[in-house]
Amino acid sequence: DKKIIITIDGWSSCGKSTLAKQLARELGYVYIDSGAMYRSITLYFLRNHVDWTNPEAVHEALGHIKLQFHANHKNGQSEIFLNDENVEYVIRDLVVAEKVSEVAAIREVREYAVKQQQEMGRKKGIVMDGRDIGTVVFPDAELKIFMTADNAIRVQRRFKELYEKNPNVTIEEVRANLEMRDYIDSHREVSPLRQAEDALVLDNSHLTIRQQLDIALGWVKERL
Ligand code: C5P
Image 1: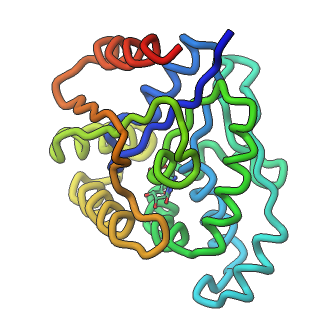
Image 2: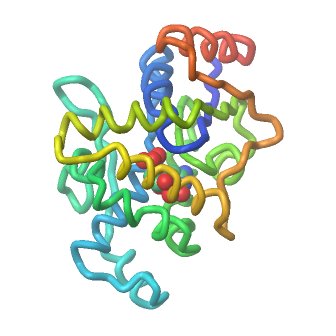
């Protein structure tokens, strides 16, 4: 029974985690949301007033952070725990999203996260989504997907998701945040967001969730 590594990278809010979760469920693989790790580290830094422009403060703080993924007993979905606290929902807040790209650009933060991500993929049978998974974390992955979607569609999707939790959120705020994150993520010095040379592009602007899953499953089959 051959198991592979599937990486899904791309711009913010183009449906990477939706596809990753579906693929993991279909294939019986582990799903890891690498963005949740950067968001959790950012949450810790914000709560503890860590001055992340100071490398020593970052080093010290990372020493106090433990990240774990556990399956939710009700729906089987993987959720992230920061020092034993379930933070899966709080890390989606715009307060965290405003700072996460800054924190994720710090070299030591990335080294900390990437090391754990690589460890989680040691036995394969994993789907991981993020920005540098196919380029840096698993450069030898059997299937690399690079997702894109029209800007307006991405903003709408993320707005809808955030609005359900907080009706005070505005579409302008959401658009500004997506643009800012995409800019920082693709321009940073350490492992910027870019398409791996051997990645397959999936533009889901006009695809249903079922259609995008079928396309990806077709690619998986060719590699098993
Ligand atoms: O995937 P998500 O939008 O939750 O990621 C939040 C942020 O975490 C991204 O905007 C990016 O700054 C950072 N990130 C990263 N590398 C990854 C995953 C996420 O830099 N592999």
